[in-house]
Image (cartoon, rainbow, N blue to C red; front, side, top):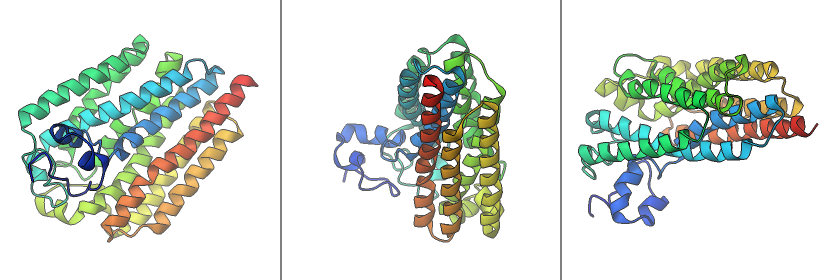
Length: 311
């Protein structure tokens, strides 16, 4: 089997492995198009913020285009972030069973070519960003600092999930910036709530690699919490629900938004009750289910925005 045809251990049986041209497969794997869950999770706070801001404005005219631009931007910039992560982590990835078959450590693509692909993705992301107003553009550029340092945090702290939360929740600010041209207290509180949510779900994700991480010196909240993970999840998911609810209240949201929040909260409770940290496969399934949790909240916020706009 050629390097291009080789598969990544934790992403088999997907369209990239079966349908994409051979030459494109290593690059699609670098940007995680074979595993789009991360793009969806990056997108959720963007959509929440956009729907909530549209409700504040009582105006839906710009919401559809904003939703589409955020969709494209999330997939492109998550791809760029993953490429950067794989470049910086290439030596560590080669020591972990689940990640040693990724494109760079397995030799599917060189570091130089990966860097060129990173620049290309960043340029596409810039084109998307430039469709927004000046304030949103500057705010989007400001996120790059957090994105750049995140891959290094697992080497120095047991809390790299905080930095992932700072990066993956940035969209909670971008919806207000794009639609209102400003940040309001509701956006900042929504951002904080999203960070708590990210810490929770990425702790679940990190339990897949806990043993290997401990051996190679990678730190995570999964290792920090260990058998106390369920208790930690109750705390962080609880904080997320309270803060997001506070953001809805600050934005004057109605009952449909709070119904979406209730469905979101119920989903998180079910995750904690199902979780078995000794089962990597179950950890991955529960982690992926956070897309559905995020969509439940977005649905409530979207209906609320429509009701407020036409009411």
